[in-house]
Amino acid sequence: MKGKFITFEGCEGVGKSTQVRFLKEYMTNMDQKCIFLREPGGTDISEDIRKIILDTKNVGMTNECETLLYCAARAQLIKQVILPSLEQGISVICDRFIDSTFAYQGVARGLGAEYVEQLNDLACNGVKPDITIFLDLSPDEAFARKGGADKNDRLEQENLEFHKKVYEGYKLAAKRNPKRIVCIDASGDKFATQAKIKTVLREGGYIK
Ligand code: TMP
Image (tube, rainbow, N blue to C red; front, side, top):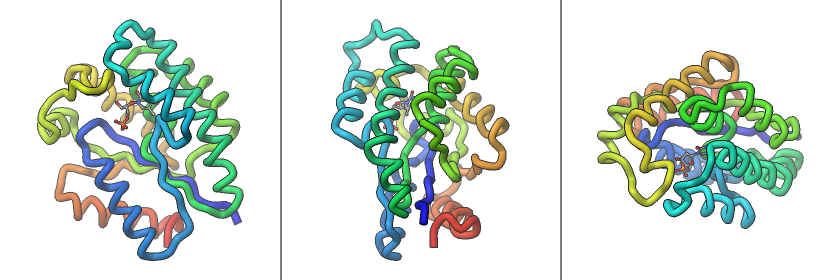
């Protein structure tokens, strides 16, 4: 039986990593066959690409180069880990995926939907998430939560204006993929958000 492919998306500071960790604890306790990954990353090659992308010394990186690197890291992850796992009936939970490229590079960097969707399709080789949890929180609130821009990472150090565009990008992605992307209000307490996520995933049959 095929495993389920679940992705998490959201702007910086929305508590995405915490929610992914909560789900990991739950899945482990329930003894459900699954692996947890992050993008860009999840394989040695993809982690190396991640370092290049996020390195603050690479200020001269073009938007096109950045997009292609995210897609290269993704192509490696899909063939090496995601596809074989799904085929073996192991569910895959990934922190960020194609909608990050849509929101960050397509919308915030301004490369356009068509450009990133074509590259995403090439990288993904027909693999699409069964469900995507979008943690919905305004960038103002998210920025306040994490205490402003992070100077250690080339993308995170972008200003609030950039992150507002990322948020708009996510909203647009959700509008274009209403069946796959589920928007979860992440403005409340982290345990309340966790409960909402679990309900959506259980009711949809994505987890036990
Ligand atoms: P992380 O901080 O969630 O690990 O993600 C790394 C950064 O990369 C984050 O700022 C979002 C960004 N990103 C993109 O711009 N495009 C993408 O396709 C992906 C996967 C991440």
